[in-house]
Length: 141
Image 1 (cartoon, one colour):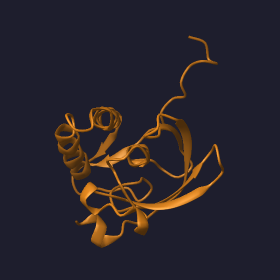
Image 2 (image 1 turned 90 degrees about the vertical axis):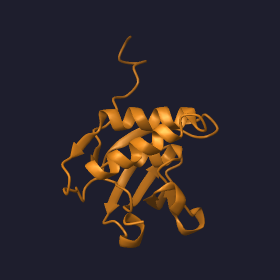
Image 3 (image 1 turned 120 degrees about the horizontal axis):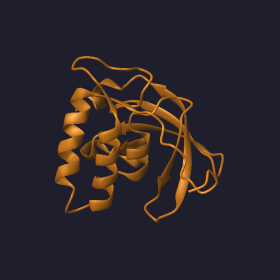
C-alpha cells in the first residue's frame, strides 16, 4: 500500500472510565439492531486512552461536551452537545453518541480531524474546532 492510497491515521482519543464502561454496554446492546455502528463504536473504544476513574479531560469530547466542528468538504461549522441516545434532540443540538457523527466526535480534542461515514455511506472529514465543558444536566443523565 502506498502513502497515496493509505487511509489517514485515526487521531488519538480519550474517554473517561465511566463513559467507556457505559458505551461498551451500549455497543454490545446494539449489535443486532445497528451492527455497523456498534462495530465502529467498539473499534473506537478499543483504541481509546481510558482515564482512571474520577479523572476527566476538558480537552476531549465526552458525553455532555459542547463541540464545534467543521465539515471539511463544505466548510460548514456546526455546534452540538454529545449526549446519551435517550437524550438526543437534534432541534436542540443534542446529538446521540450512537450516530455516525457522534461516534466520530467521541474522545476528540480541538484541532484533530477524522474521517467518518454518513448514514448514506458518504465519507466525510470533520475537524473539531472547540470542545466546551459538559452541560451538567446532560452529562449526569
